[in-house]
Every structure is written in structure tokens, then in C-alpha cells.
Image (cartoon, rainbow, N blue to C red; front, side, top):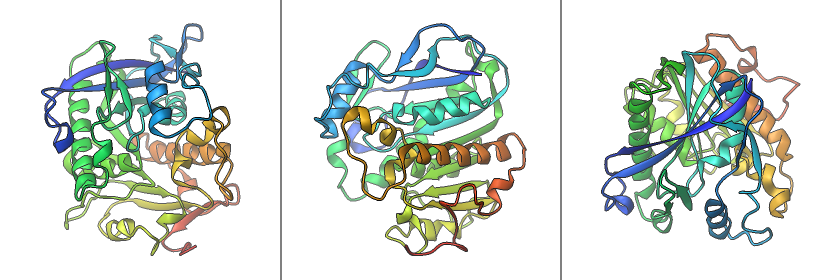
Amino acid sequence: ASRVQRPEHCRGGTHPYDAVQHVEARELKVTLWYPTEQRDGQRSPYMTAKEAELLLKGSGISTAPYDTLSRTRTNAVKNADPSGRKLPLVVLSPGFTKPMSTLTSLAEELASRGYVVAGIDHTHESYATTLSDGRVAECLACDSDTDPGSHAALVQGRAADVSFVLDQLTSEWDGHDLIDRTRIAMVGQSIGGAGAVAAMVKDPRIRAGIDMDGTTYARIPKSGLSRPFMFLGSHKHVPGGRDNSWDRDWKLLTGWKRWLVLSDAEHQSFTDIPLLADVLGIEPLPGMMPAARGAELTRTYVAAFLDQHLKSRRQPLLDKPTSRYPEVEFCPATCGQS
């Protein structure tokens, strides 16, 4: 099926993070990708011109024109007619300072496999978010990144955002028949992955979750988390590595669980950023896996997890290492400090 997207905007209450508490009503931009048979139509831009400009400026990228990413087209057809109904829903949450569009290739892949994908732009936590009336919300939280406790507060805020979005998407609206409210998962990168943990602890509607290379600032209760969960990380997340939050939380995951590490991956390997490096004039980090390979591994293992836990299709790929993907290490048993 083709991949498509449709932006939806919804208003919620105030955000628990101090940096944005003065905002009277928190407005979220949620982009939906879903299967369609429609092949003609306007392909969606990767992001708006202002979003592209502020992202490159905020990231310190001066090697490409500021409109480079707004001139880039995705595989999605805007506002296409959906095919299918009662499809499983996957919520995506991006990393800190990053817009949802940096997970576009993963969203499109999942939509092509029969999922509805709801990508959340967490307002005021990325360099730019274009709202429904054209206003551009800039990052209020970015300067507070080093404040003690800021990350824990951010992930709790993301959990609140996710629950609010699920309330809206599972209520009566024009597209509610598209979503099976009993089959919901969440996938996040970096602090979005930490948000997946926090959201699952808070909201039992989320049946399964994946943290892609995110330190888990949210604590799992001592009683544990019994729903399926997968850690998918870079070399810094091997057992006993620089970040010990996965070691801590692994013991508290009491249901189906996997801890996978991609050798030669780096933090952004799970996003579109390496795929965009050429057009942005960014040199790849030495020794890192090729961008296309990182994207392939991410899509393959995320889709396998979701197929197993939302579609009840057993995936032998998740049982043990395979020569087809030798970069994928199964932890903690078969990997260690690298």
C-alpha cells in the first residue's frame, strides 16, 4: 500500500514541564500515516520552510540552504483516502529538539505494512512546530536541557501528551473506524523512547512499546511492567555501558522483552538524520554503519516486534541472532561492553 499522512491538531491541558507551563492551552500537532490504494496526489513535503530553517539553525547546520528539507518530498500522499479499517495503531515520539518528521521513513514503512501511525510533535520541545493556523511554536524547553530533573519531567509530559492523543483518536471523529483501539503500541527515539516507558506505566491502553536508544528517565514501579517491551540501541547501551538505565529497568520488565544492540550504530541511526546527511552536507561519523543499513535494521526489527505483539504473528527474527543481520546483538546474554 502507499503511504500517506494527514495532520490533525488537538488541544490539551497544560504541560507538566515548567518551561511550558505558562502556555494556557497546550496544542499538539499529530500527523497520521495510514495505508491507501491511492497513488496520485500531492506528495507531502518533509517539513515546512520555517521548520526546516529553525531545525538547521538550531542544529548548527550551515552546509545546506535552509529550505533544503522543505523542498524534500516524502512518499506520502497528503489527505489520501485510507484503505482498511480497524487497523493497529502505533504512536511515534521523536527525540528532544527533533520534529516528528525525523521519524518519517519509519512511519511510512509501518503504514505500508498495515498500521496507522500517529506521530506526535511535542510542542515547545523541538526547534519548530507548525500549528493548524500557521503559527510556528518554537522551543521553550531547549535551554533547560541541563537543569536537574528536567528530563524526568519531560518524559512525564510526553506520557501525558500520549494519553491525551489516545483519548482523541479513540473517540468519535471522522477517522475513528480506521483504528482498532484494542491494539495500540508506542515507539520512541531518545527521550521519546523514555516517554514510551512512562506512557506504558501510566496508560494500560498501550499494549507494547519500544525504546530506541533512549535513557529511561521514567522509573518503572517495583511491581514491574508486564506488557511486551523492547530496547533497541546503539553501542552505548550494552550492559554495563555508559548508560546503566537499561540495566536497571531490564530487571523490572516482567513480560516478553528483548534488548537488542546494533553494533556500529550511533544515537541518530534510528532516525532519518543519517539518510539526510548527503543533502545537508554532513559528514558521517567515522566507523558508523551506513545510513541505509541503519534504517533497514530499525524498520525490520521494529516491524517484527509490532507484528508479533499487535498482529499475533510470531517472528523468529526476535528469538535469536541471525547471519542475515550480524550487526544485531541480543543482550544481555550475547553482548557486552564494547
